[in-house]
Image (tube, rainbow, N blue to C red; front, side):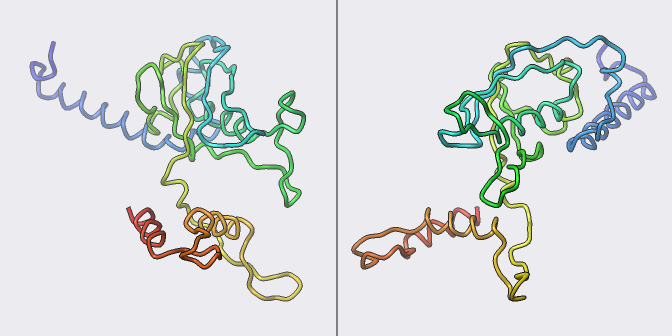
Length: 218
């Protein structure tokens, strides 16, 4: 029976339940904070032994271009993103034999990529797996053992706020935080050039400035 053919009161109940479901899904887009979905408590878990994930987030010879993940199908999409974030942040120091979260220049272990920063593209459906499904189990999403996924960094997440300057512990003077210093250096490297126009110095030309402004104001 179509929704339009049902009694008015029944249609209202169905619509209310639909809206409630959408509200719950929206509230779980940042994970369920270790609360297990009802689906994962009421049925047996099956291991998805070989999820294939192409790495479009971290780049360089020390990172893997593709990873393979084994995870139970009662895990949520958020759980999967957490696993992917850890694996894609790992680097190798022995030519690819092992991958770990090695310390960076500051001596601290490299942090995993936050699940909220990851956009997953499902090859089978040729579409993104949307954030409102983060609290849904992989079984409900009908993921297969050999599912092909692409991991990308969300553009919006790149613009998250963070401290730019801190007080120097020795001098008390303001200085750039290491992430801000790296970000500014990377932007300058990308939007500057060494040429006759810049008299052999690395500078941002007027054209490159226009290019930079157009990119950040889209």
